[in-house]
Image (cartoon, rainbow, N blue to C red; front, side):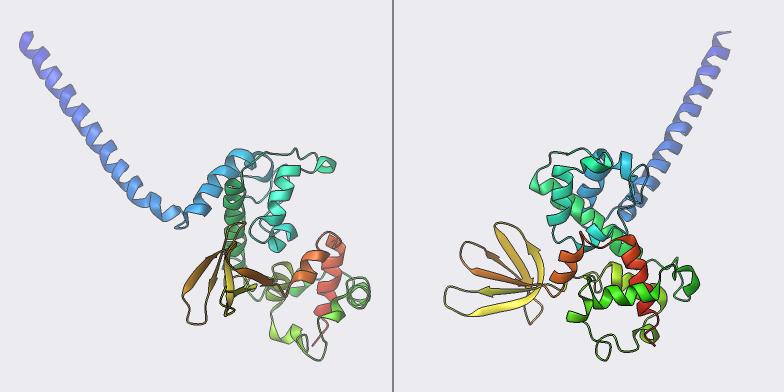
Length: 269
């Protein structure tokens, strides 16, 4: 009897060791795979966690919408620069749409903005939508109304030319690319097209694509490709934003305007 008990205990011990080994093995596999699912940018990862905690209930944990709208394809996110528009909506809320204000620090807002911009960039570069996507599925607007908006209240003709940058634009870009350019005009390979011009105390100037800007520091890429940062209280900073008119138009542009404009641009062949 005593011998049988010892044998049974030995078998149980071996089974426990085997289970522990299996769990340890899968733990190693999961820990090795985990970093591949996490963004290399710490700000994006912090923003993802903050967004899921504070915003995911309404907008979905991946920002593609739930009770609230999809933010990956939001015009507000597309026109946001370093959290200026996203932060305002977060802190003030949107009472007309039952969105309460959420108190957040500048750092938390910046992280959420980084996460949302990363999601938008991921959507733009996604290979899940073919460039040969049928244009009929995108042409839901009225081209005549789009032309009227282009030449009238939209003010598009003040910056764009049908014989210049928009000449035969519908033959140069696929429908999906053209609509992406409309919705996310500030994205070119994931980089902002805002130019920062820094005037040094000596009077010399350094300029290049804006990389970072807050109340204290501005960072840019100089002509040689090096990252340069400057304390704003020691230099004069000017930000040249060729999309300023687009950002001002954001609060006035409706979904119907977007579809009508796209339908009009698609006729430019």
